[in-house]
Amino acid sequence: MATIKCGECPLRKKYDEKPKSLAGRFWRWHIKFCPKWKIYLKSLNSEQKELIAEKYNIKTNY
Image (cartoon, rainbow, N blue to C red; front, side):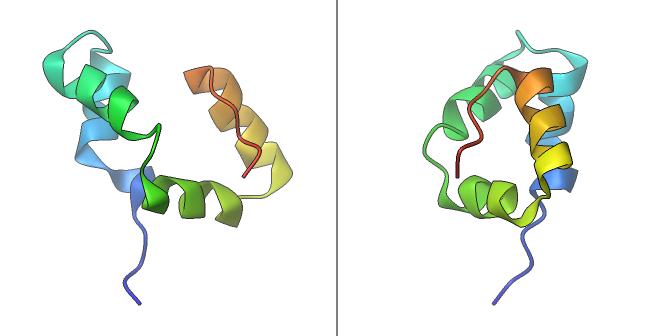
């Protein structure tokens, strides 16, 4: 199985730099249903999930 690299995603970087850019908005829309993003979140410990949830204002109950 391939390694999930959501932490290094180029689109995520673009969102971090310019959230309102087309690429940034696409990433934000994409994570709503992306199965790899959900697996990535499951692989994080609770502290890391909390940081992600706060940074991106999302639910991390996966």
